[in-house]
Length: 166
Image (cartoon, rainbow, N blue to C red; front, side, top):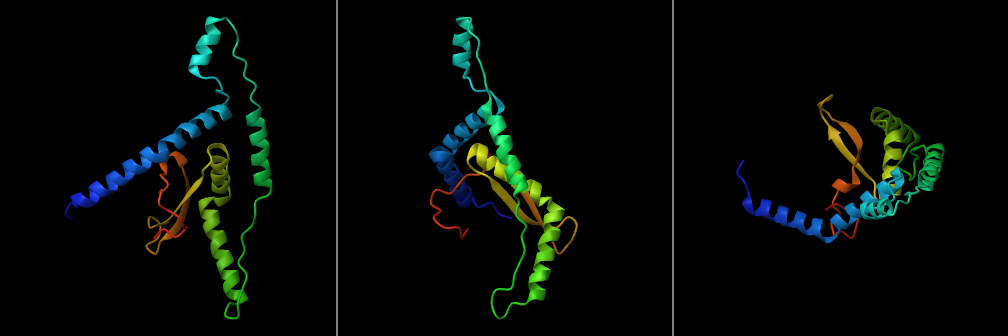
C-alpha cells in the first residue's frame, strides 16, 4: 500500500491543532482534578514553602467520600435497557429479540461496570468516553466490543457541531 504523504501531513497537522487548542488545557485540568480526588491537594511549591516554615500541610479529603456516595447512587440507580415497538410496522417479537441481543452484548462486555467507569471519568475529569467496535477474534461475523477509553487520550474535534461523525 503506497504511503499518502499529503494525507499523513494533514492528519498530523490536524492533531497538532487540536492538541494545542484546548486538549492540553483539558489534560492539565483533568490531572489536577484527579490529584484532588486522590488527596494530593497541595502544589509542590506550596508544600516546599510550608516545609520551610515548619508548618504541616493539612489535607482533609472531603471529595473522596462525596464521590463515593455519588458513585454508589449511580450504581444503585442503574437503568435497564429494553426495546418497545413504537410504530405500526414494529412488533413485540422484534422488540423482545432486540432486548435479548442487547442483554447478551451487555453481559459479554460487563457493560454495567463499564458504564460506571465512564460515569466516574465524567464526574472527576469532565469527560467520559466509550469505544464501541466490532471484534472478530471470537466470531467471523463479529461481536460488539464496548470498553472505556481514557478521556485524556481523546481529542475532541473543534469543528464538530453535531453528533453525526460524518
